[in-house]
Amino acid sequence: MTRRARDRALAIAVGSLVAMSAIVAGFWLGGAFEPSQRTDGSFVLDEPGIFQQPLDDVNADASGDRLPDVVLYDADGGEQRLDQLRGRPAVVNLWFSRCIPCRRELVDFAEVHAEYGERITFVGIDPFDTPEAMVEFASERGVQYDLWRDPDQEFVDAVGIVGFPVTMFVAADGTVVRQTGEIDAAGLRSALDELFPEAG
Image 1 (spheres, one colour):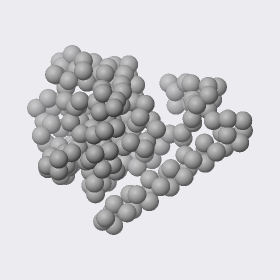
Image 2 (spheres, rainbow, N blue to C red):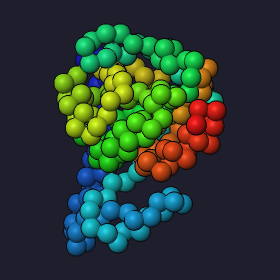
Image 3 (cartoon, rainbow, N blue to C red):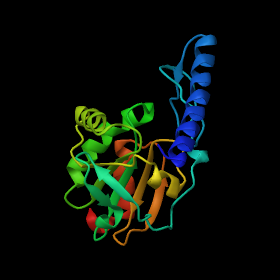
Image 4 (cartoon, helix red, strand yellow):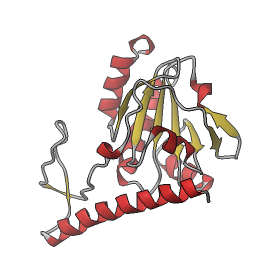
């Protein structure tokens, strides 16, 4: 493991510790809760479930930048590059299997990909899982688009990502036009229709 990868793993461990502290605090106060309202960035803790402190504010925003030219790997170990995405709009989703919000949204990504996949390219990038775990986890949620690994975290380092999930909406020329954290199917459709109306 490279030094950069060790540093990234340490940052994720610290973030996970913060999230676990929030969960423990929720149980201490009478149970864990899931926010029921997120439209303005605030949370209403009135539903049973699990609360995870959002980490969006720790991520750099790549909007306006070109995707970095780094080597990623498919499940078979083949090299893949992000410049392959140029030519039509793309959705790049960064996730991994132990990320609770990633678990929620992957089903939505699979659903929306089935509707838009012939016009917009979808790619999932996983910086932590083994190829087998990545494919199994995504397949269980209906994902059928390309899945690439970032085992040395070169991509997440290049774009400044610490909190997951992250979704980048990428124009046909490779420029990130919007970046978001967790997003559901309705939000994904709305963003695609707004940002890439020609692909609708």
